[in-house]
Length: 592
Image (cartoon, rainbow, N blue to C red; front, side, top):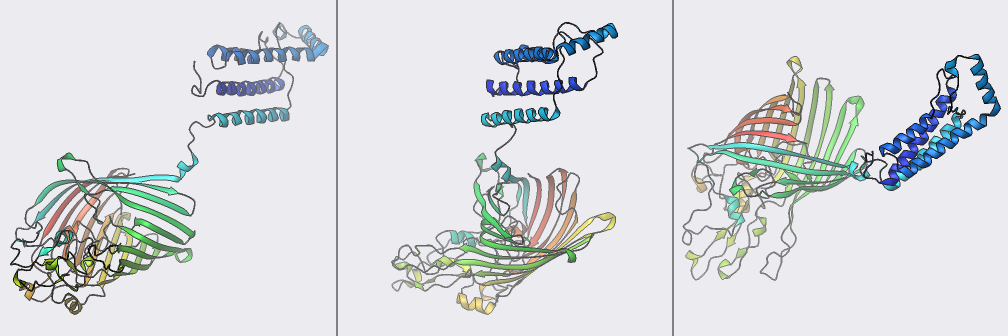
């Protein structure tokens, strides 16, 4: 049986047929009442009667319902004939006598009395109300409708497939220590009498060609109201690194890891203020010199934005409290005396303006202050590891995550065994020798050049106002382990407090429509202690500080929200032994 609503059952068909029949009855009545006298013989059955018979035969109208409607239509037609009485008969006879044969009525002809428009409107509204009420009750009123809450949910994400080659100079130093591996383990014994093994070293000479890597991120954003939102995002990643969600493929074709990348709430108490908490994207205007584009922030932030249309300027600002690491609740675990809560926190504040100079020029600039509180290493009190202690008092000050480049110091003040001082094991951890209080300036200028082509210039200057070599040496008590000049540890400390970044982009800033493209050329220099090495871009010099170099690349969108990107990155050390690294990255990106 064919039906417009086969899954809704008999009540739905019955209501639908009733509505259709009633509507057609009204329409037919109105048309016949307003039409001129017929010029041809009327059929033996009315159009409504034939329609009802057709609905019954096609199965669209249940037989019992159809027969009832058919009987009602026939009765109404007969009543109409009787109501007209002798006047109608006389008029018909006159028409027969006066008019041509084509106007003579035939047996079974029915004339429908005029129904006023107000009555027709009232009947239509009553039928519509009754049918829609039944439709909502039975759930077939709007078969394509979805639950209201689903309209407030947005799904967004991106996928990237990258081929990467890491090319190292044959002249690179081959004794670059993997300090992060030392901190992740049980420490490295620096006593040459009890340990002759080398510390863990990073590869600096053997190329790694054609590594296939991927990144996938999938997020859900819920508009709880006009003022409140919530979001959750999952992402790939080879480990819990804060600066990269890229996963290297291979690994025996094993399944890849998924991590919680974001989980946040935001609320706008007023139009110009947004409060956000949880784990969220970077709330500051910055470049990847300081914060990787994959880095997310834990904590709370307040973002302000106020437009001044007359001046074509928008003023913005951000204040954030970002916890970096909490001291362990039960540290030290094997001691009855526990340490007090001593947390590592980033306090950030920024103010800036976005000025639309004219139709062809736009300038955006911001000044920020970042205080990385309590992240510098501390030399411990004397600890007697030889007597069975398994910790020293400042073990917690070693960084939770690090890349490379910062000046490092030994954290443990290990007491020698008085019965055998020469053979006392001295497993060491390392921490940051410098404090970090950063003054950060960012600027972006968008303009148009020949033939209306877009040109974007970006600049970023960073200065560590807390950098002080004398205090670093005093804090470490002579225990600095890297960033020396000629002569190794006996030489002078070679470090610096400044970093800068310059980039020019010709073409679309972010190609997302088919045919859009851009070209990029940039240069950056990051001195060893200009900023913490843990949080910046993991591609340039394979992450960290004490690096300088350039990059050249471009992108082309071959479809909507789908584009190719290729870049060449060349970098080397600023101070210390030679470490030159080149990267070639070719990738396919898409977003949705």
